[in-house]
Length: 300
Image 1 (cartoon, rainbow, N blue to C red):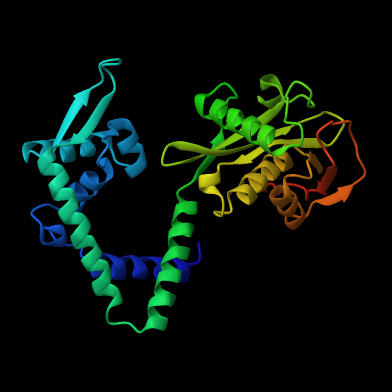
Image 2: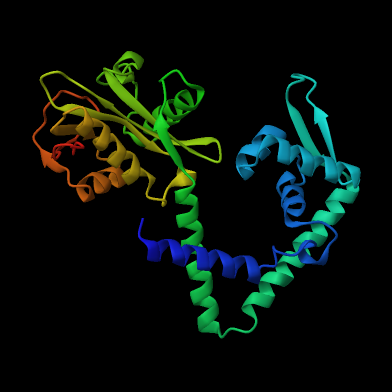
């Protein structure tokens, strides 16, 4: 990694932590540190499953338990077990917790306004735009992409969402039974690979490749959740599928898509796929693409 890039990120982190006051023991001049205040905020007015809270904040279970215990001792939170499943615990704010959250909300608004106040209108616009871009890029860097068995719950979620979106966007709907096969066995090594993207523990995208002995490999099941679009995740999934294929010795990747998926068509063209004549009889396709891959580099 370029040393200058690393140094810039570290300098940015120091500036942000200083300017936002997170180094103080009492965040926003209250009696608790940032960690407790953030957990209080994230529980929200409706309450939150503790496992979901841990995944969203990417906290160690022991540390989150200590934060919740401190908030319970202050009378701000109560943690309850679900009647339907005793293994599930839900954190809820008490009346005092709701009142404290409202105070934190007001103080956070005041702190944000204090950052903006010394700046000119043009500087405020630039700062807010830059913050939005930084937020998107930091979110993108938090996405994990890794192989999953097609039967994994995260994989099943993505595939169901993929089929549902196609059914809503294609003229006449979508029936996977009519489409060219991409069954579980075909997406399981060594026949293929299915990648699943997760963000804060939640599945937000998938993509797969089917391998063939004497024919080009096929890209299948490319999907990104609406909540994760704009993060460059589609390009990342495609790039990682290409890397998997190259390591298997694949030199040509093919895919087909429907004219309704304009974003996907733009992605494939931007990634170097060229449109070619139809190479299969996929009933839902109007566009066929292929890309020649460079040979995978090997270590001497």
